[in-house]
Image (cartoon, rainbow, N blue to C red; front, side, top):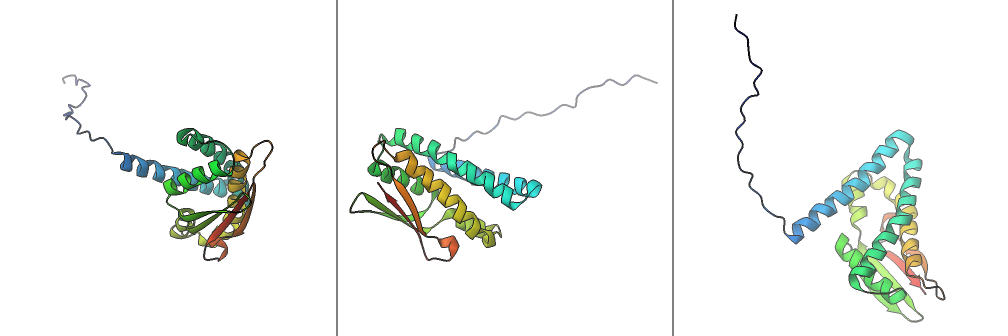
Amino acid sequence: MGRRENRRPEVEVREARTRVLDDGEKADYFQRCYTSADGLWFMMVEEMWGFEEALEIDRQVWSVLPKIQARTLREMLGVGKGIGGLAECIAAKHSAEGFGFEMEAEEGGRLRLTISRCPWQDLMARSGRAHLSDRVGSIICNAEYSAWAAEFSEEDRKISFLLKSRICGGDDVCTFSFEG
């Protein structure tokens, strides 16, 4: 009986068709990855240690991530600290993330952010987790936007944050107030 050779099967290699993503497609790709990673890690931690532990870790993440976002946007937009820089960067963030929102500068160095559409709330609803959004939103939005306020505070002028209404809490809009 003859000896069989161990030969690798021949594979036809075709030239790969490459198409470069345009800027809009790249933004969409990274947005989907960003939101998927956020939800996926949360559900994995929740599965292992429970909802409350996952929410606490999420709070910690959203207490730090806004610092990175704010510093990145300040550099990209060439703006400084203070309520004016906060307004520009928050507007850029919300536009990039697909929020429906309006911002209004008020007397006394105040800024009001009104959100009419929250992509995170929409995502919770689409994933069948809307019943958790009130609890998540009350914790995460306070952590996130307090971090934004702190990041734009100046040594002699701190910016405070107050969460006045939330879509996930049953209100028609989210209303955030920054004062500094």
